[in-house]
Image (cartoon, rainbow over all chains, first blue to last red; front, side, top):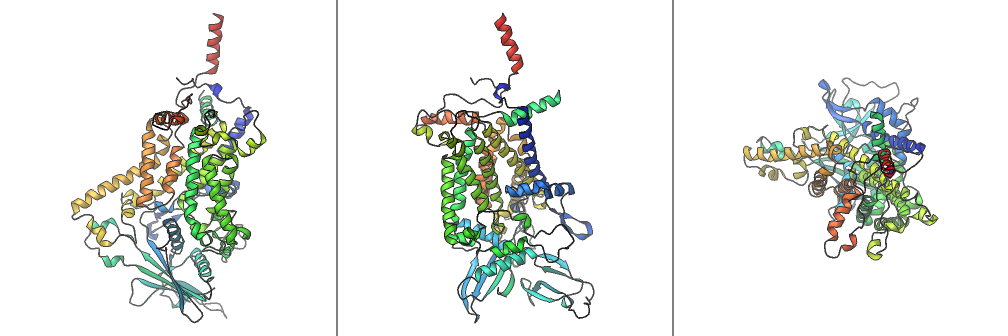
Length: 249
Length: 378
């Protein structure tokens, strides 16, 4: 029979030590909890605006921006545990890379995730490629943008669909006045461009490499509705390509 | 008074020394997991972790710099990647920018993980393991959900092992800095006189912190799932069965030849999806109850299998399972150990003195002392 568990099993530590430890525990776990709350949420329905993400509650943001946030970063516990894998219907992405020399000759042709790599490396490559897929939709101006004297109209970088194609787009930079007025276009995020340039530099470190042509291929998930709705066809799930074109350092 | 009960409950939960049995099991499994996590990256060290890799030094600098369109008068001049980038021992150019140094760091790290798992110099290897895990998991470009579990495990194992046994009288300075031989995995096998693990406040604190943080992760992750209509509609588990880029349209259509079969498929998938949600969101309600242990561990095992074979997410499954094992008490481990000791070749597992059962109600000391005094006087 096990000995009865008595309060004497508790160590006879000074009261101040219990209080100090309790405060430390509450601070630590409270910081972790506040960080979890201080996360963007959504997408939620936004009425006439469709759907979108919302900012976290101010009290949680304020706590995290103060010392608790810095403490969590220091101990590497600053995640909000809103796991990307919680989102079910995620597209799959591939990256096709052609490294070229000064004359435009292809030195190397690569695909990521690399089918020759082991499963764990392929998984990380999948994450790297997925970081390029953070486009957002923006509405173009309703009317012509008149620039200040001596200046040009601003240019937008956006995904321009190829003529007569529903599945191919190229990254184009054009004057905003050349875009369809009041329409919606997909634009790459700043984060996407940051990662893109880093990947370009990575591929161009190979000997004799001068430019690299990168194309992102998106494969959409097949919804369960295909079991019920005969209106779905295989052509609706063809891969979509997004070409970044030839890029240099 | 209710608040006295609350204080007593708090004190008993956090400050009752327990034998470090659960801690040792978690340490052994986590150490092995850390090693298995890092081992496959040996062929791609420079590209994944180096400062000349996919995410290079310039990208770190640009990610931390304030955006060009930021308001100069604003106090917030953080870069777009500022929330994601912390420190790492791989950031210095002498390490991350040097392929040879990176290789050395990699192999030394693997050695540290193995030593930690085996219980060698655990105070030192626990700290080194944490440093290594956070450093190799710091790259924001290859950051992954499963890495969160590894960082949490490494942190609390470090806390526990730094504190473990520090109150022991007569402990040498070497033992205070590096740890004792009591943690050695094969100690009991090689030396019959290996002492029983003493109850430790450090072990309790480390395990309790791990338990609470882990429970928080489960609940938050479960609630996050509710932000997606596919989970509410019960469709969520369809997608890992027919992953984008792998499953074809015809394969998906072929799963059900008519509407009746399709409804059966969705019945099963939606029930399973809600079981996942209930298990995760209700986690704190059963994780600490011994009677619900099968629910905890079976759910963790199913989660492991699903993560491995359905979602093809490395690390997440075993990390989830190890986190759940942290809820198993020392008394339960010793009961299981006693059962296993009955199997051929495992007699060395048998313990002579069982650990106290945490679910047994504590005896009031004052009443006990008064009762003893009365009986003596009589």
